[in-house]
Length: 126
Image (cartoon, rainbow, N blue to C red; front, side, top):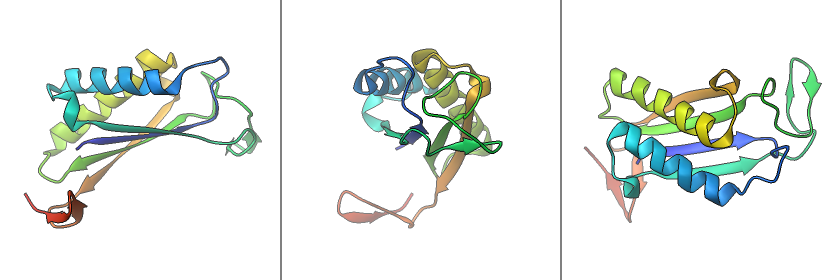
């Protein structure tokens, strides 16, 4: 943990998502001082025309509208300052490697509480 879940329209140019996920994971881990083996990242692509903002739909991801949507799942033992730092690190890593401005990223944190996570075959507590 943490998990970075990214959702966006398809990129306007041929961008290899697997390569982006690797780069984002490494940058995020470096910014937080984590080993990359603890970072999980996913990228879900919306179908063209399946994302409206301000009542307008788009077919591809732009740099100025239809923000990239990010849900960052962090463990419940993170203090609020650590959650804020993790959100900033996720936005910075995505902006750098997906080449979109941070102003076109919407990120939110989801805090996974102790006893509310099932992983590796067991209920996890911390």
